[in-house]
Image (cartoon, rainbow, N blue to C red):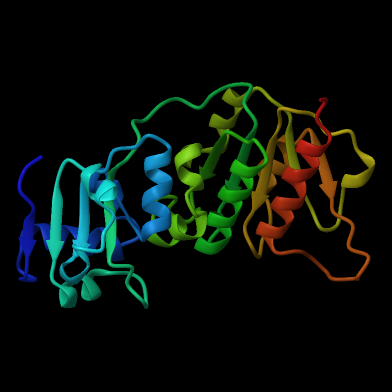
Length: 257
């Protein structure tokens, strides 16, 4: 491992790159790298066998940082406390983070349980659905054009490490979903069969739609099943992340042992 890089100037080239990755939601698309911050996300990446490109730690935290977390990286950058706070995307900076390489592009897998995100805008919702996908055995997530950037810092924080156990695809066109070769299930607040009355197919692809507009008509037209979630409390609709958790759990619960 090379000697640590000490950063005390905001004019430092590496610092500028780190700040952009930490604050710009789509910077990863150009650089091929993404930023994760905090002990939990860093450990989650290591537990999945990933190797950080750069471990970044603030200057006052070097002696307290876990040696294993730092030693896992091929390069270490030590950033002054003031600059780390300026760089961080968190209100309370976590003192350390990793720069990670984006996964190598691969084709979507056929016959694999999938979650489709149709123009879901909120980063918290997207991250929450990635967590549900990982928890309930859905191996890949396909984000159609218009969905929040999957590897943005906000979605990564909301995903709580789920990214590292999933195959993720973004910027996908509806026509490309034919490659999945599994039943497409679409939720609706006003049409379809009640989820509790169905024997759900598995593997399947659940389509979760835009927070205000729902699933687009093109996906509606392609759906194998239209499904409703009962709401005896009388609310008009559910938050999309809550609906996704219910649907994915129902698929897992109904699977043959």
